[in-house]
Length: 198
Image (cartoon, rainbow, N blue to C red; front, side):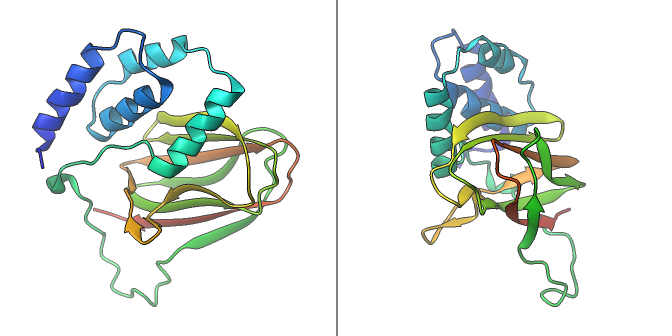
Protein backbone atom coordinates (compact mmCIF):
# COMPACT_ATOMS: atom_id res chain seq x y z
CA UNK A 1 0.00 0.00 0.00
CA UNK A 2 1.20 3.53 -0.73
CA UNK A 3 2.65 5.64 2.07
CA UNK A 4 1.03 8.90 3.21
CA UNK A 5 3.31 11.08 1.04
CA UNK A 6 2.15 9.19 -2.05
CA UNK A 7 -1.49 9.40 -0.94
CA UNK A 8 -1.20 13.15 -0.36
CA UNK A 9 0.18 13.54 -3.88
CA UNK A 10 -2.69 11.51 -5.36
CA UNK A 11 -5.36 13.40 -3.41
CA UNK A 12 -3.78 16.77 -4.33
CA UNK A 13 -3.81 15.78 -8.00
CA UNK A 14 -7.53 14.99 -7.71
CA UNK A 15 -8.16 18.34 -5.97
CA UNK A 16 -6.23 20.20 -8.68
CA UNK A 17 -8.35 18.48 -11.34
CA UNK A 18 -11.71 19.66 -9.93
CA UNK A 19 -13.68 21.30 -12.73
CA UNK A 20 -17.29 21.38 -11.55
CA UNK A 21 -18.31 18.10 -13.19
CA UNK A 22 -17.69 15.87 -10.16
CA UNK A 23 -20.56 14.27 -8.24
CA UNK A 24 -21.39 15.05 -4.63
CA UNK A 25 -20.32 11.57 -3.53
CA UNK A 26 -16.94 12.01 -5.23
CA UNK A 27 -16.39 15.42 -3.62
CA UNK A 28 -17.22 14.06 -0.17
CA UNK A 29 -14.90 11.08 -0.64
CA UNK A 30 -12.16 13.49 -1.66
CA UNK A 31 -12.87 15.77 1.31
CA UNK A 32 -12.70 12.90 3.81
CA UNK A 33 -9.41 11.73 2.32
CA UNK A 34 -8.01 15.28 2.48
CA UNK A 35 -9.11 15.73 6.09
CA UNK A 36 -7.59 12.40 7.10
CA UNK A 37 -4.32 13.43 5.50
CA UNK A 38 -4.34 16.89 7.10
CA UNK A 39 -4.76 18.72 3.78
CA UNK A 40 -6.67 21.90 2.94
CA UNK A 41 -10.28 21.37 1.79
CA UNK A 42 -10.94 24.94 0.57
CA UNK A 43 -11.16 24.00 -3.13
CA UNK A 44 -13.43 21.05 -2.36
CA UNK A 45 -15.68 23.18 -0.13
CA UNK A 46 -16.04 25.74 -2.94
CA UNK A 47 -17.23 22.99 -5.31
CA UNK A 48 -19.57 21.57 -2.64
CA UNK A 49 -21.11 25.01 -2.05
CA UNK A 50 -21.78 25.34 -5.80
CA UNK A 51 -23.81 22.10 -5.99
CA UNK A 52 -27.60 22.27 -6.22
CA UNK A 53 -28.85 19.34 -4.14
CA UNK A 54 -32.34 17.86 -4.37
CA UNK A 55 -33.92 15.77 -1.61
CA UNK A 56 -33.48 12.69 -3.82
CA UNK A 57 -29.77 13.49 -4.18
CA UNK A 58 -29.27 13.75 -0.44
CA UNK A 59 -31.21 10.54 0.21
CA UNK A 60 -29.05 8.68 -2.31
CA UNK A 61 -25.93 10.22 -0.82
CA UNK A 62 -26.82 9.09 2.70
CA UNK A 63 -27.63 5.56 1.52
CA UNK A 64 -24.24 5.40 -0.21
CA UNK A 65 -22.53 6.92 2.82
CA UNK A 66 -24.04 4.26 5.07
CA UNK A 67 -23.04 1.49 2.67
CA UNK A 68 -19.56 2.71 1.78
CA UNK A 69 -18.72 5.23 4.53
CA UNK A 70 -17.40 7.53 1.79
CA UNK A 71 -13.84 7.05 2.96
CA UNK A 72 -10.48 6.09 1.51
CA UNK A 73 -7.93 3.80 3.19
CA UNK A 74 -4.93 5.32 4.93
CA UNK A 75 -1.50 3.70 4.91
CA UNK A 76 -0.64 1.21 7.71
CA UNK A 77 1.79 3.64 9.36
CA UNK A 78 -1.20 5.92 9.95
CA UNK A 79 -3.19 3.32 11.91
CA UNK A 80 -4.26 4.37 15.37
CA UNK A 81 -2.67 3.14 18.59
CA UNK A 82 -5.05 2.57 21.49
CA UNK A 83 -4.35 4.48 24.67
CA UNK A 84 -3.54 2.29 27.69
CA UNK A 85 -6.61 0.86 29.45
CA UNK A 86 -5.18 -1.56 31.99
CA UNK A 87 -8.60 -2.51 33.35
CA UNK A 88 -10.05 -3.58 29.99
CA UNK A 89 -12.50 -5.28 29.61
CA UNK A 90 -13.66 -4.63 33.17
CA UNK A 91 -13.46 -0.88 32.46
CA UNK A 92 -16.45 -1.28 30.14
CA UNK A 93 -14.64 0.05 27.06
CA UNK A 94 -17.35 -1.37 24.80
CA UNK A 95 -20.19 0.27 22.95
CA UNK A 96 -22.30 2.85 24.77
CA UNK A 97 -25.96 3.81 24.34
CA UNK A 98 -27.42 7.29 24.72
CA UNK A 99 -31.23 7.15 24.90
CA UNK A 100 -34.02 9.68 24.85
CA UNK A 101 -32.40 12.17 22.45
CA UNK A 102 -35.03 14.77 21.49
CA UNK A 103 -33.86 16.21 18.17
CA UNK A 104 -37.22 17.51 16.94
CA UNK A 105 -36.56 21.21 17.64
CA UNK A 106 -33.48 21.55 15.40
CA UNK A 107 -29.94 20.22 15.14
CA UNK A 108 -29.25 18.56 18.48
CA UNK A 109 -25.99 17.17 19.82
CA UNK A 110 -26.13 13.37 19.87
CA UNK A 111 -22.50 13.01 20.96
CA UNK A 112 -19.59 15.35 21.53
CA UNK A 113 -16.06 14.03 22.16
CA UNK A 114 -12.99 16.04 23.08
CA UNK A 115 -9.57 14.45 22.64
CA UNK A 116 -8.14 11.73 20.41
CA UNK A 117 -10.48 8.84 19.64
CA UNK A 118 -11.00 6.00 17.21
CA UNK A 119 -14.71 5.64 16.50
CA UNK A 120 -15.87 2.40 14.92
CA UNK A 121 -19.61 2.52 15.53
CA UNK A 122 -22.21 5.28 15.12
CA UNK A 123 -25.77 4.02 14.91
CA UNK A 124 -29.10 5.77 15.38
CA UNK A 125 -31.81 3.55 16.84
CA UNK A 126 -35.55 3.88 17.49
CA UNK A 127 -35.82 6.25 14.51
CA UNK A 128 -39.20 7.07 13.00
CA UNK A 129 -39.73 6.84 9.23
CA UNK A 130 -39.34 10.55 8.53
CA UNK A 131 -36.88 13.21 7.43
CA UNK A 132 -33.53 13.06 9.26
CA UNK A 133 -30.64 15.53 9.12
CA UNK A 134 -27.14 14.39 10.08
CA UNK A 135 -24.19 16.71 10.64
CA UNK A 136 -20.78 15.32 11.60
CA UNK A 137 -17.88 17.62 12.46
CA UNK A 138 -14.41 16.19 13.07
CA UNK A 139 -11.56 18.38 14.32
CA UNK A 140 -13.55 21.48 13.35
CA UNK A 141 -14.22 20.31 9.76
CA UNK A 142 -17.79 19.49 8.68
CA UNK A 143 -17.71 16.02 7.11
CA UNK A 144 -21.40 15.13 6.74
CA UNK A 145 -24.25 17.65 6.48
CA UNK A 146 -27.23 16.19 4.66
CA UNK A 147 -30.86 15.17 5.05
CA UNK A 148 -32.53 11.92 4.05
CA UNK A 149 -35.72 9.99 4.71
CA UNK A 150 -35.25 7.20 7.23
CA UNK A 151 -36.41 3.90 5.79
CA UNK A 152 -36.13 1.82 8.96
CA UNK A 153 -35.73 2.23 12.72
CA UNK A 154 -31.96 1.65 12.68
CA UNK A 155 -29.61 3.92 10.74
CA UNK A 156 -26.00 2.70 10.60
CA UNK A 157 -23.93 5.83 10.04
CA UNK A 158 -20.66 4.03 10.75
CA UNK A 159 -20.46 0.32 11.44
CA UNK A 160 -17.06 -1.13 12.29
CA UNK A 161 -18.19 -4.61 11.31
CA UNK A 162 -20.78 -4.98 8.56
CA UNK A 163 -21.83 -8.48 7.51
CA UNK A 164 -18.72 -9.86 9.18
CA UNK A 165 -16.41 -7.68 7.06
CA UNK A 166 -14.24 -5.12 8.88
CA UNK A 167 -15.07 -1.57 7.83
CA UNK A 168 -13.10 1.65 8.19
CA UNK A 169 -13.05 3.65 11.41
CA UNK A 170 -13.14 7.40 12.01
CA UNK A 171 -10.32 9.09 13.89
CA UNK A 172 -10.56 12.46 15.59
CA UNK A 173 -7.46 14.24 16.85
CA UNK A 174 -9.14 16.92 18.95
CA UNK A 175 -12.94 16.73 18.70
CA UNK A 176 -15.95 15.00 17.21
CA UNK A 177 -19.48 16.37 17.14
CA UNK A 178 -22.47 14.46 15.77
CA UNK A 179 -25.67 16.48 15.46
CA UNK A 180 -29.09 15.11 14.47
CA UNK A 181 -32.41 16.67 13.59
CA UNK A 182 -35.69 14.78 13.29
CA UNK A 183 -38.93 16.04 11.77
CA UNK A 184 -41.12 15.01 14.73
CA UNK A 185 -39.47 12.09 16.59
CA UNK A 186 -38.73 13.14 20.18
CA UNK A 187 -36.87 10.08 21.47
CA UNK A 188 -34.10 8.45 19.45
CA UNK A 189 -31.01 6.59 20.65
CA UNK A 190 -27.36 6.65 19.65
CA UNK A 191 -25.18 3.55 19.94
CA UNK A 192 -21.47 4.27 19.61
CA UNK A 193 -18.01 2.88 20.24
CA UNK A 194 -15.17 5.35 20.80
CA UNK A 195 -11.79 4.23 22.12
CA UNK A 196 -9.16 6.73 23.36
CA UNK A 197 -6.01 6.64 21.24
CA UNK A 198 -2.46 7.95 21.49
